[in-house]
Image 1 (cartoon, helix red, strand yellow):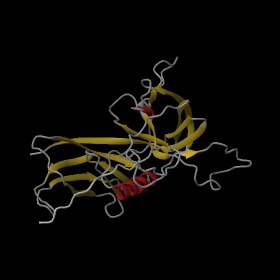
Image 2 (spheres, rainbow, N blue to C red):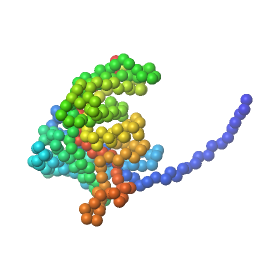
Image 3 (spheres, rainbow, N blue to C red):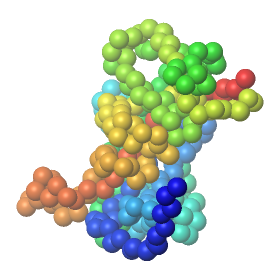
Image 4 (cartoon, rainbow, N blue to C red):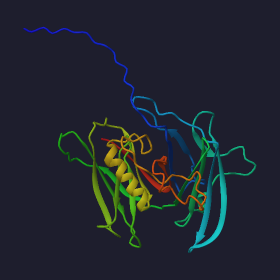
Length: 286
């Protein structure tokens, strides 16, 4: 028998990191049966490995809402945001404003445009998105097939795509698991597919499964994030790969000397701002 002994020395590694970047978690999921849009913008910053993700505060945050009818502008108004509680980094319509800052759901259509403007540590950030409706889930049932290990849980999901346009979808299967799909091969048809949970799920567990509307930009962002990050713990945590979203650092852009960020590619935040309709079904695991 060979016996090997030794001693261990603790070594402090100084990992070279870049300056923190702003991360905007701006996915707003709309239930059209509710009265108001559930605006909640979470702000964090990137950090070095092995450290907690720090929340951060903005000097100001607003959302500009522009309503259109057949391409013609009909109304523009602003929702001022305030931090939900000191130090939370979560921004909601300001409850202390003179006028109600909440956004009524009844004003939304597929032409409603939202612009998020944030001032953070003296820098200006902007993101723009158009409201994305979605079709409902037709049904969600538990299947009995497995894949490689033999103990996966199958979920069968079905929905009916609309024929008028090209559609993109994001599915949230809970547990930080997401899936994207586009209607290239099933436009205007009933589409049914299986999704498999690799980890064992206790019988009786209730799992919310949702379908969200998406434009092509949000679809591509989530597709890249899912591919490069593996299992997500939410799509706006600091990813293992730097996937840029639709939030732009516009500090110093004056449309005279500086028109865009082409000459300063290192200047960008992370995260995404989207306002989408969501339909949720609850599946009880047998």
